[in-house]
Length: 212
Image (cartoon, rainbow, N blue to C red):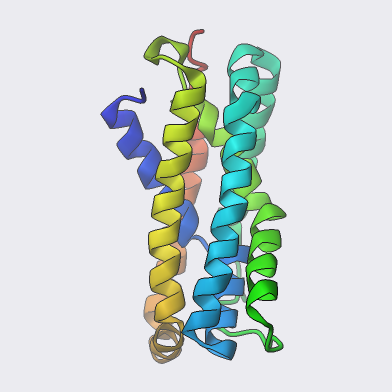
């Protein structure tokens, strides 16, 4: 299984990624503000179903392939580092928009709420890059089954994401109002997030491939 220190580091990376504004957060916040907490939670279940697809796609063979094939591993490592730097820039660039500025969305029935949450996450490039480029950094054949390690990491990421997004969905309206009244804190949060993302990108780029 994944060593505790690596699991904690991975959990920190997963927490950072879920706190970084992206399609999932923007959709859940907008849905919760426009249609209420129940709609936000139903959409979140769709998002979690999308996470399961990403996780099992990685666990069944993708992660093992990237650990075994140096070129694929290196290519995805650099792609992941580049994407993290892109997210860092998106956080600090002038005119960056807060995810707590709600988008206007139509009222949708429960089945469509679940489906839209699922599709939003399934097509989310941030999640795809996370699973394909960061997963291999924490998987090592010397620690046992690559499949079991991948599932362990995936479930860890899903639990963290569900917990954070549930809190966001249930308090989206209050958070949006608080951020609107606290522009300085929001600006500081953006710069802290951008700095941490850039640091994670550097760590990913300099990480050595684990021996098979």
